[in-house]
Length: 283
Image (tube, rainbow, N blue to C red; front, side, top):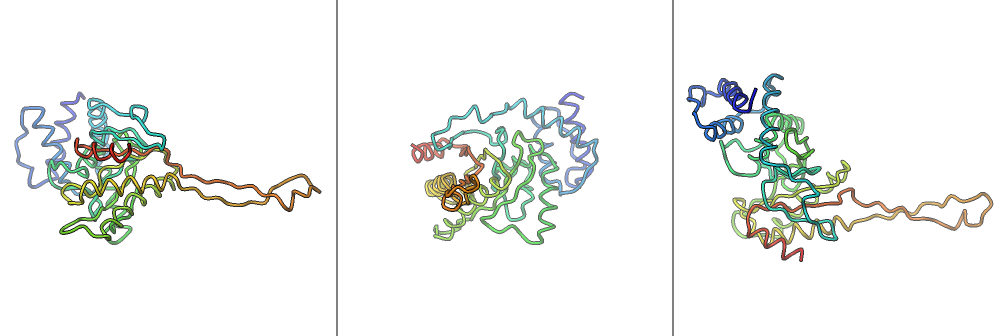
């Protein structure tokens, strides 16, 4: 199959699952077909699907990924702290993990063709991601609390993994609790990445935009939390093993230092305004 044939196949398969879209006519233009396919993927409830569909979908999404172009860690400039800024589509980043600003249901955005990052990540990862998130939530048995993190494979994304975190929503004035929870989002993602031995993580601007966390303050919290984490180390004194009979055997010790596995952190921004804020904060 070529890309057009894959798109038509996927649309026809997904149409049969949706009462809303079942009778809709498939448009003729490729742009409109892409929008329709994305809409069908967005509204599909989590669940299994046969391998034939997955094979075609994966080939389609990998081709789309190649068309957009993959951005690697080597394509990004980092400061001495290992922190970098990159403006663009987070689904293009080939890093160990990208961070998704999820909702408490954790299964993605169900609004057809919505422009939120949650929608974009689920669209380009494929239907497997929503199903995996649903299984995690079913096992958990309750909505995801704000400020924590979960990890899933990236499936068809260039990133190996996706870290999902629910950020605070600022409905009126900003409070200390909002700030504490936002810092917890960044810290929880970094701790989970460290637990998994990941080396590179790309953060979106969690809780800004429609969730109304002030951009400047959000960036200040993000930068401080990342800096504090990457400086973190623990020292453990261990008995020194030396030659038998040496006086040093009982008196000397050495220190084992343990530092986080995360060596590179990228602040992914989409707007010039946010890029300016992060560049000022990082010097």
